[in-house]
Length: 135
Image 1: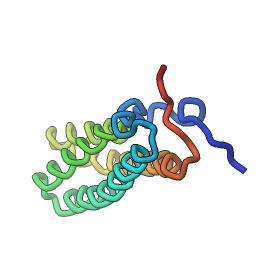
Image 2: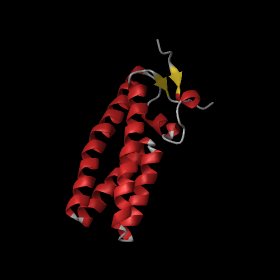
Image 3: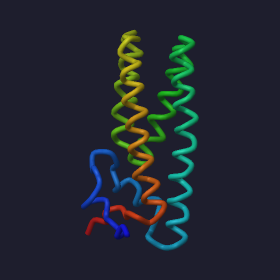
Image 4: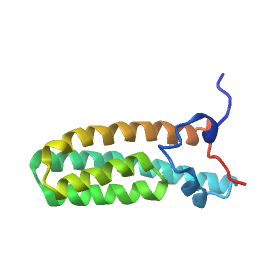
């Protein structure tokens, strides 16, 4: 049986900035419900946006792609998904510089970062981990 873990002790801190999540919950039951709602919403909308990013790349619609990347970056920053944020920033730079070949590899990295982020957020939602609380 897996014990309740703290993120600070057992998760890759580079993936998530847990301090950013503290604004969504005061630790109460109602605060946790709000946090879980926000994390589920992030996961759901990010999945949709990742499909849009793939579509924008496949169709060569740079404006559609830029808007999808920008929207995802904002969402990632809001919930502290730092690894995803870094991947999106790199993709935005490559798109501006018209380095389209590099975008495919970066998209793959973004999708991997999303998978890792989802695992951590789902563990938090399920109560298997808790965000590190600073003193």
